[in-house]
Image 1 (tube, rainbow, N blue to C red):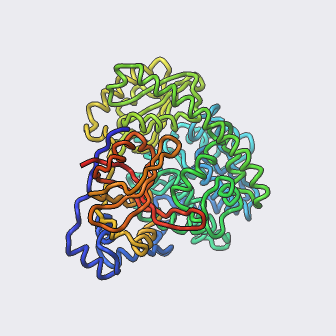
Image 2: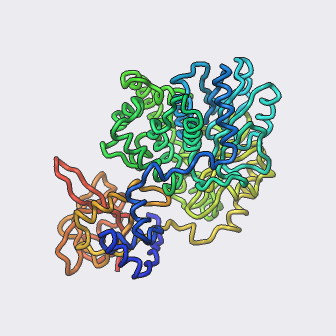
Image 3: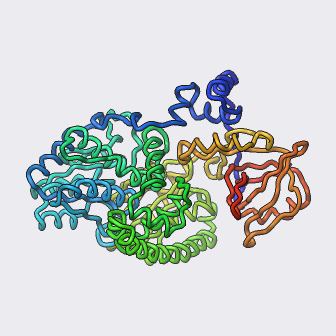
Length: 568
C-alpha cells in the first residue's frame, strides 16, 4: 500500500457557513463544503443545486462561431458534400455521432470519418484528406482534433477543401488556415468557459446553427446524453457550463437515452441511477475499445443506432473488443511494472518513460495510468507504430505533463494534449535521449509532495451528523468529478465493532463506531487487507471516507467507503 498524504481543506469563514446553514437549510458540514467550493451565497448555492439550461453561454461568444455556422449553412444550401471527422476516443466518437447525427436527419450529402489509430495515428491525417478529395467533399467539420494540424489543413485548402475545426486542446504557436477554428483555449477567444470537451464544442456549434438558422430544425438538446458521456470520459472539470451539460445529459441518459447508449448501459450493467463514475467505468471502456483494438467506426455506428436491436449488434462487438483490451492491458501492465522493479535507476526516478516495440498501441494510455497507481509519478508508455515511437502520457494531480513534454519538443515529431494526458511521437532512436531529458525536466520542476498520493479531505465529521437527510442533500451535489469531487470526510476515534470480513483476499468489510457515539455504520475498505490484523486488535484509528448508498436484497442503507486509515 502506497502511503498517502492527508490534506484537510482550510475551513471557510464561520459567518459564511452560518449564513448558508440558515439560508438554504443545510447542516454545517454541507455548508462548509459548499463554501470551500466557492458557493458562499443563497443564489450561488441555488444555481449549484438547481442548474438550468438557461445558464449556458451564448455560443456566438466563441471566436469564429459566426464563420463556422455560415460555412456549414452555405454547404447545406449549396448541396456540398460534408465530411464529419473525429478522433477515435470517446470524446471524438461522441462528437462525430452528435454532429453527424444532427445534420444527417435532414441532409444526406454527408458522411463521417474516423482515422485508423494504427495506420493514420491521432488527429487529422493525410489519408483522411485524400479520402475527402477522392470522394468530392468540399467541407470537413473536424471535432476533437485539428488545432495543431497546420500543414495538413493547408494541404486540404490547396485542394479545394474547407475546414471548420471544433477542438478543445491547446493550440500551437501557429493556427491552421481553417475557415473557422472553434476552441475556447485560443488566446484570442473570449468565450467565458474554457473547459468544454470536443463534444461540448460540437454541441455549441449545433446550438449556434439552431439559433441562427431555425429553419434547419436542429435540436441540440436531443444530444445531451452524448455530451454527458464525453464530459465524464474525457475527465474535464465538472463545473460551470460542463456541470449544466452533465446534469441534464445524465438526466437524459436515465430518462430517454439514444438507443445505442441504452443498449450499452444494459450490457455494461450501469445502474438505473447513472453517475459520472458509472459512465467512466461502464460505458467509456467499451466505447474506447473499438478504436483501441480495431476501428472506432463501430462505436459511432453503435451511437447512431436507431433501435436497441440494431445497437446490440454493435454492443456485442464492443464488448468483445473490451475483453481483448483487458487481456492486453493486464499483460502489458505486468511487463511495464516488472521493467521498473528490475531497474535501480527507474525505481528512484521521478518520472517513468518505458518503451517496448511490441506493446499494443491501443492500451498504452491505460498502462500509463496503471503504473501511476503503483509508482505515483508522471508516466509515458511508448511503443512502435509506423516505424516511429509513439506514446501516451499521464500525470499526477498538480503536475502539467503537457508542459514537461513541450520542453522536450526538440526530440519530438509531434505532441498534443492536456495538463494530465498527452500523446507524442518521435524517432525510435531518440527514445533514450527523450527518457533522459524528460526525467531531467520532471525532477527539476515537480514539487516533492506531488510524488506522494494525496487525499484531499473536505471536513471532519462525527458519525452522528450522518443522517438520511444529510445524505439526501449530499446526493444533490452530483454530478461529481474533477472540480466537484465527491466529498471526502474524516472521522476520529473510530474502532471496529464486531468482526472483520475479508472479501476476495483483498478487501475488508466491517462495522465502525466512534468512541462515545451510538451510531454505527457498515464500512467497505477496498485493498485494505494488509491492515486487517491491526484493525482486529481493537485499536483506535482515523478514517477517511466517502458516503454512499448500499443496495442489498431489496434494502437500502448508508455505507462508508474507506479511502485510507491512520492509526493513533
